[in-house]
Length: 427
View (cartoon, rainbow, N blue to C red):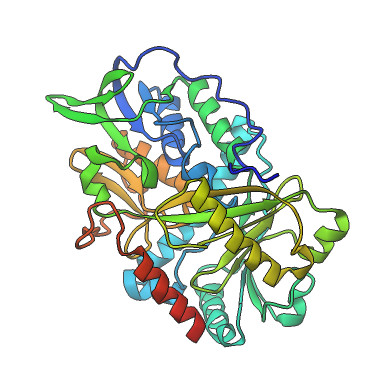
């Protein structure tokens, strides 16, 4: 029977270091949000001897950090040529390398903190879903390989057969530095490390109000309030609520949905993903997939353009995802689905993340579907800003205008879905 819950949450024991009493006290820095960004910011600050508190509305790793596909893919969401045109060559190059650095940082933290989370440098395949996509993907590969990432390879259709057990793809680009991880165990490990270094973490403590003080901020929650000299907002699509109107006007919350099969047999693995890498298709409304540590196929995508994620919405999306999975892997058409879940992605209009300071707060968010790999680095960047250390933010100075006619509820998502669907049909 299908569980409507994240595979990454299931089976991970509750975080043992959470504060049981009321939210109270005076801190140097308060971090809002217990995902990878906030947890690594708190860990880094605590290691530096800073009195730091973290406030999480649910439990650590509850939001996007525990509801994604489990990929740590280097590279950026855009074609590299598009990023150069939008940002300029120097910034596009620096941002590309920042994703590399973040995966390196995750690997280092996992080793230093002893986090058992199945980190592995698997490599990522960007798959050409149509013959017409090959030329554009190949041009992107040629540019990336020459300018910014020599650890890439082009695979033609015949070479693809040893990687993906499907006739759906016509070539692909391999990013060899990309990795995968068990997201729930990584979040738990970051929280445990932050607590061990001295951070105080309150779960079930959504921030409902903030008041500026002469020397910082007062943050209010249903469990009490605390004061802090500096505040870090690491809220993304989940915690960017009414007290954070500046960010609500710049973040678009979009649903992303995922299913996980029962564990595959050795023969099924060999017929499905013999290369055992993370995979992403080239469609605008595409899919992404990988094998889990216990050999399930984890298959996701933007099945429906929705800002909802509840059991009804997830179930409808799960049906669409099963159909997409069967089209790519017909031999799995009737396989039982053990997990089905959804999550919200914090998108920006241009799909570049943002980090910096505004309105007296330090912030990092807007990962646009690439947060699992980038958020750890951004958490360190936010800690650096709080400590007065400059020069580590690859997003510094990137303008972030509000989205016209948007106040936090993305009424325009169905129109966006229709547009991308039309582009996929015509491409």
